[in-house]
Image 1 (cartoon, helix red, strand yellow):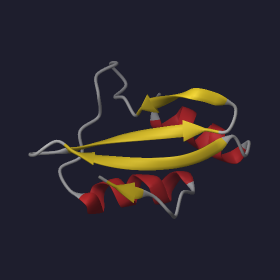
Image 2 (cartoon, rainbow, N blue to C red):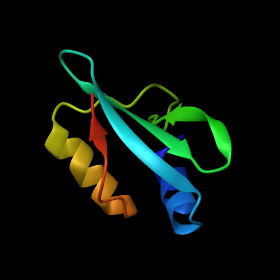
Image 3 (cartoon, one colour):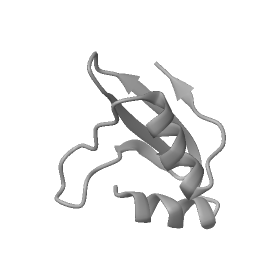
Length: 73
């Protein structure tokens, strides 16, 4: 799932929660949805997993799509 798709699900009220996962040298972001049992990882435009260097970067992207609360693992 890309950032644009995430914004659409947030606008459609289908979003359930977000969790940033510490991978040592970067963070990845997993999101869950109300009617879907599978979580999705935020991806780049080319299909790779999007890597965030800092939690501030995760926070900035989530705020851009309208998400204010998220978990850190």
